[in-house]
Each structure stands twice: as structure tokens, then as C-alpha cells.
Amino acid sequence: DTGVSQDPRHKITKRGQNVTFRCDPISEHNRLYWYRQTLGQGPEFLTYFQNEAQLEKSRLLSDRFSAERPKGSFSTLEIQRTEQGDSAMYLCASSSTDGPTWETQYFGPGTRLLVL
Amino acid sequence: QQQVKQSPQSLIVQKGGISIINCAYENTAFDYFPWYQQFPGKGPALLIAIRPDVSEKKEGRFTISFNKSAKQFSLHIMDSQPGDSATYFCAASPTGTASKLTFGTGTRLQVTL
Image 1 (cartoon, rainbow over the protein chains, first blue to last red):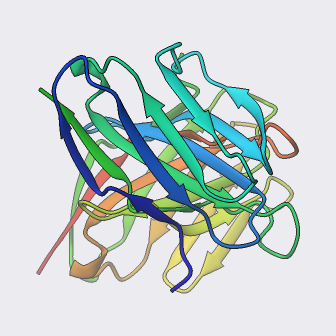
Image 2: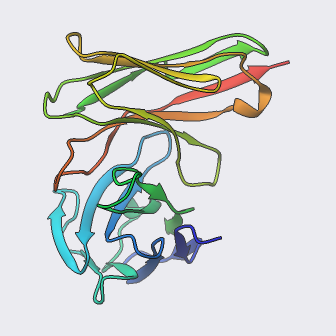
């Protein structure tokens, strides 16, 4: 299966620690998105990349959050000095700007973060 | 500011019945409207999507109805099955570079036997 993969699937950390999540998009997808989903809510957009360029960041993405996609393939999302309010599911999605499904975003299984 | 409003929050339908979920949007720049299905512990999966140049799109048991003037769209699940029990999210985005999705708050569907 060549779907979007995310690692780790679960992460428990203590408040103040740094965490990093990884997303591997569907191969040849040039767009990659990060969303955050809290319990009982829909996903909220955080940021997205086209190839290696970060084109948009949400106001939700405070300066403790940083995302990279250094070679236009996988991406990492780092949260520094985690807070309990950061506890959520972090979802990655990818899409292509070409082909018949060019506007469809395919989501990964998510990384569930719990900050104690 | 919630730009996509979804209702109902939860829905119980008998097997074989019709499930209807409604969404309304505010941003007139939106021109792509997908519906996603999410099972517990999983990421959202695209179910069906529509663009505003058509008023209805059907794929199997799933139909999207779209009313551009009212800025509303809905998902109809015909012959609902227990396996359809999941959370459904409507979403919207403008196309082009600003293709981030704005999601509704979700509808938890339970299909009973």
C-alpha cells in the first residue's frame, strides 16, 4: 500500500518536552498538508507545502511549531516546549496538482499526542 | 470564525434508512466540497466530492446535493448499513494555491439493526 504514512502513531510526553512527528506522503504527490484534530472536532489546517516550499501557515501554528519538507518528499512537524493544550491528533495529507484526482487530499492515520 | 457549519451533531438511522447530513458555508471563494468519512483511530477518508457547476453528484449509495445560491450542501446515504457507522465531515476549499480544507464539526452516524 502506498498511502500516506505517519510516525509515530502515538506519543505521550511531559509538558515542556519537544516532540517531532514524521509524515511520508503518497509518492509523487507534490503537496503536503498538516492538520490538527481535537476530540469531537473536525481537522483544522495548520500548514502546507508545495514541493519543499511552505506556502501557508495558520494562525494556529504558534512559534513553538515548526514544519519542514527539506527535499520535497517527507515532512516533519516539531512542537517545542509542549503544553497540555497541544494534545490532539496530528494529521498529514497529501495531494497532487496534476492528474484526475488533483484536488483530492489523502489523509494518513494520524499521530495522537498526549501531553501530561 | 466557523466557516462551515454542519448539522446534526449526531444521527441514528435504522438499517436500510436514509441518512441526511447538512452543511452551510459562508466563504464565496469556496469551490470544492468534499465529504470525508472517519472511523475511530483512523484518518479521514474521502467519500465523495462536488464542485459548484453541478447541483447533484451520485456515487453508489452516496449523493451530494448542492445549492449554490443558498450556500448549502448535503450528503445523503441511501440504504444505510451498520458498516456506515462513522463520523462524517463536510469540508470546503478554494482551488488553486489556497487549497486548504475547512472542515465542519462532524456528524456521528449510528446505523442500527
